[in-house]
Amino acid sequence: MALMDVRCPDCHGLNVVKYGMQPNGKQRYLCQDPHCTRKIFIVRPAAAPAPTGVRLPAEMQQIIERALAGGNIEETARALHLPASTVAEVFQVLARFTPPPGGIASRGSRALRRRSAG
Ligand SMILES: [Zn+2]
Image (cartoon, rainbow, N blue to C red; front, side, top):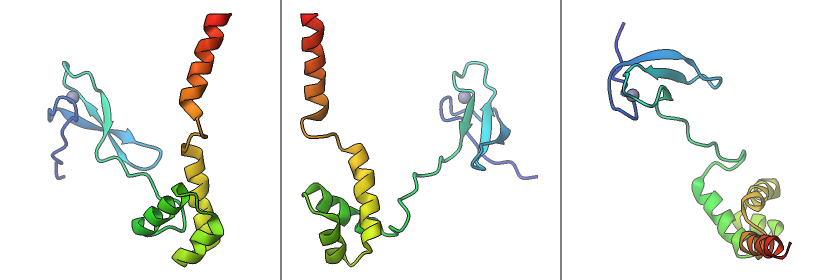
């Protein structure tokens, strides 16, 4: 049985043993160094998956640029020669992460005003 050179990401020690699997099938490890604050870790966590239907990061980048410039789904799909469903998917994901106009900052100041008044 070959031993892997797995190091703890915190203490960089080699006093590490296999410790079962993540639900996604990744190998979990346990650091046995008594001075280490980290106990369980995973080597090379998987990158976040791209939305389905978008294969090239370049396509994704173009969709995002057009979405941020105020483009609409049909125009973007036609210009980039992509299915409208693919463009719609990226627009939906973006909408989830883009705060509404005047979003976080104004909401915070309103809350402060309310607190000082009441
Ligand atoms: Zn450690």
